[in-house]
Length: 257
Image (cartoon, one colour):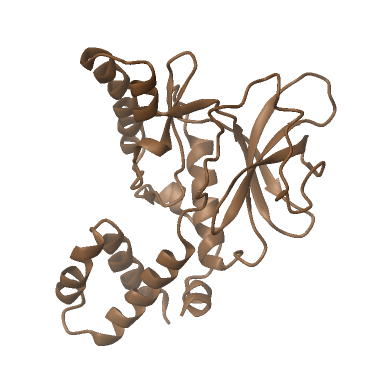
């Protein structure tokens, strides 16, 4: 597949992701305009995307965690990560897992000061070009953002066995709709909270990034009442400087198709 052809396939694929599942067939019929091979290629990408699912299916940031019980918590599904060092941090426990990877709670390994972070890691077996590309996109997006209502990126790197990870702000909070109900917020209070979420989305748009997965579970509200927008894993990047890739498009297409 030539780079020009891959650009066409990816363009139709990205546009299809913006459609509701029930709208995609009609969209592809029009967008592919009789190019049967193009439709097959795009549908293959969509199938791979649907199979991969969300990066994290379980909550990545525990709403019930407290600073008193973080270090003492354990999880039977740590997958050998408990106590492992990633950069300046040591894994404490697993706090979320999905089809493509896991998120771990970690603390400073040198104990120079106390700090908890969330580390997002691609799991072995899902480190295909397509998944790694999405993962690196998200890492680059977060690295370029600086907004009080978007979870911050602190660091990133690669494990000894070649799996990329990034270290981000650990958010103790509730999904925005649960927070509103739990605190019995008035309509005016809910709207003030929603405006902050909108501010984060607007900031992303101003930086030519479309979140594309903006749902209550991806906006957590901290105990202080500050909403934080999370999970840019399937975001669409319109900024060519952010979208620059080191992966060959033919390699991506070959692995997926």
